[in-house]
Length: 113
Length: 115
Image (cartoon, rainbow over all chains, first blue to last red; front, side, top):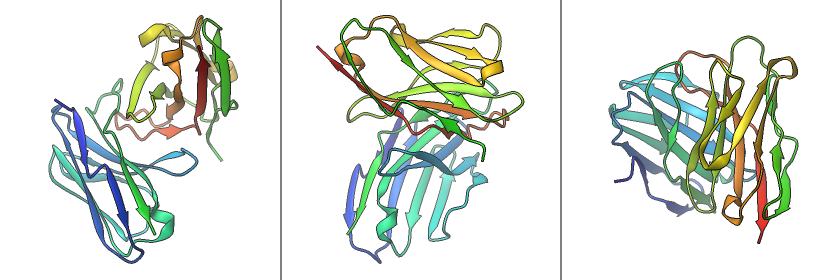
């Protein structure tokens, strides 16, 4: 059983479209995250939800809107896609504790043409 | 700006060679430190982590890392690499120590081990 699963794994779309990426974790964690990995492999946090509440919101364009229907799911919706949005988006989860660690999904590679 | 630096972007080694990957950070105060590995086509996995206590941390697959507070460093080591260690290695720092994993990652080091 995959601990953190994301769909789709690959997404190719045109500029201006709207797309969503879904994430689910079966680890019983209370916190979920979206990280973005750009073409140079640089990983940067975008959002985090704890028990469905947004707790981390980095400087991300408001075209990106996360939604957490419950603590096991965190989706990412992106409006009006731009070329610069092409990246690998990683979902992750953790339990809030000082010695916690992130468990990552396999990533969703988004290509905007 | 506060950051995490990995100075080796690409490393090529032969099997059985020793490995040391550098990681330096610029955050003051108490930080939590991590090394993650990303094997080709796979997700990031935790290799090891440091929170407190013994500054020499042992992780999975024979990896270890040493936290040197005075040097703001957390270098990753392995005495003898294998072909299967070919991967991208990321150092990460949690500068807030709140329990929420708002990690700051380095830019990664791509390791290629030739058989």
